[in-house]
Amino acid sequence: MEKKQEKMTLRGYYEGLPYANCPKTDFINEIASKTGVTSSTVRNWIFYGIKPANENHIKVLVEVTGIPASELW
Image (cartoon, rainbow, N blue to C red; front, side):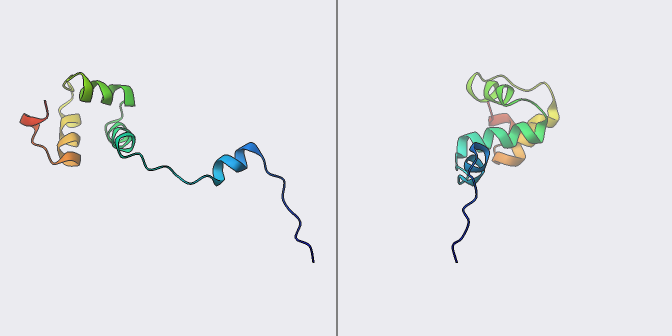
């Protein structure tokens, strides 16, 4: 018996690709998700030393990284 091949679509191809492991991007996305801000905002915290005004955001950074708040910037 011949097995009928299903038609491949672009979406099907995309969804069949393995998930990439990008630790730096994953970290930014995790912080953005936990704080409710955009990834651009998280990048500003990291690359430009902008300290979040919301103390809860700082607490999330401390919890995820293990770095004391006084040493984050």
